[in-house]
Length: 309
Image 1 (spheres, rainbow, N blue to C red):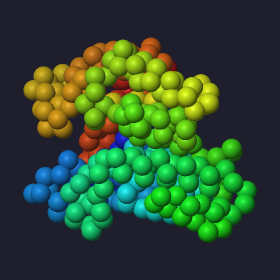
Image 2: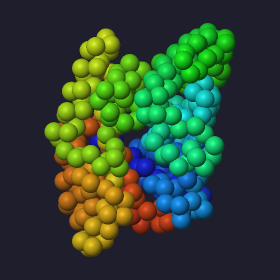
Image 3: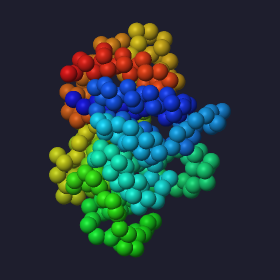
């Protein structure tokens, strides 16, 4: 079983993040992931002055200081960057890491950071339209051996080459963030390679919910002529290992988490993870682990991940 971690990149320092990266590289972890925001989510005004490290810069640093860990974002906000620029940054990172990069991309949701940094925040429908067009453009760039000309409703290219291209063959995997049944999963079926069930979104992290989303995805795959077995299924699960009930409740309430999380004694966390493995998850990313110390990372590796060796 593959295990990764979404490492916090807000309200902390680069030195604390680097220590976690070094610890994970030496441990049983398979992958490391960062979010992509410019203000610390969920968006409390009194916290806007706190650190929010830029996601792609962090990933480039991880690529150059590790040899084992696969790396990516959960997920890049499509509205922050031109998709051709994203493709260029992705292939450069893939080259630096010698093929360990996954491009995770979503429609973006954080209205306040768009306001703060002067970006337009379109309607949900337009953001979904833009995401679909971006994924089409990026996949075309990833897979073309020739310069790409592209004319969409929002983005255009004029004989744009992508060099260097993807280190990975046939191309960098694309993870489409979100499980919206009408649009997001359809975009995934058309252009993506990895589904991610996000526990931060508050959905019920149950076998039934997981299988329901997969069935919806399979219907979209059938509609667009895509083999659903070519798409991997992953889970992001916020966790905290503690025997203190108050600490577990605080972890859940402070982060507004629901059934998508696992906070409590070691055996409870192991059981929750085991449910998703039995449901058929190809990889589980653990989130919410404090980055101001490596103690929880060491504890989880020794007490939780070891149960699945």
